[in-house]
Amino acid sequence: MKLEALRTYLLGKKGTTEETPFGPEALVFKVLGKMFALIAWQESPLSMNLKCDPELALSLRERYAAITPGYHMNKKHWNTIRLDDTVPAAEIWSLIDLSYDLVVKGFKKAERQKLENL
Image 1 (cartoon, rainbow, N blue to C red):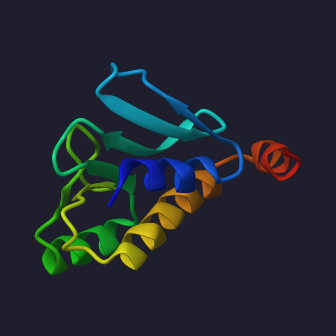
Image 2: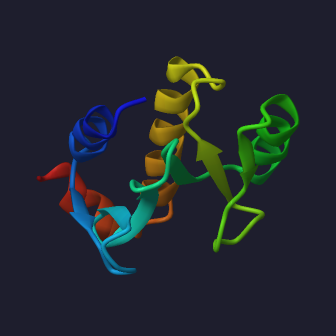
Image 3: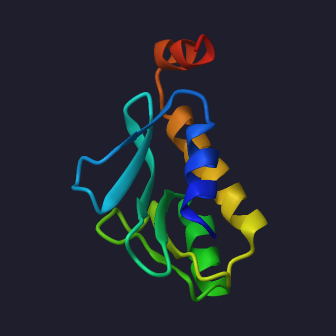
């Protein structure tokens, strides 16, 4: 999976910004200031951290060797995905959507309304 395809998809989500709060080696994608994705863009292959439902996170880790507990993250709620083409692209896009949706779901009503109005 290519970095530019990921960036385009992530930045296409409503209210998303790209930042580097942890230094230039980690691209952080936030929706209204809350992180939902992190890409270690200098790694080969790329790796990405995504928020996930805890039960699904465990299931994915059992199914794919390339999905592990979130590196430097809450391991219950975050997965790291090594983008080595062993996880189908459709699954990765779906996991990005889920991560975004989980963060938005945690917003207060006013934040959700702000997002809808963008």
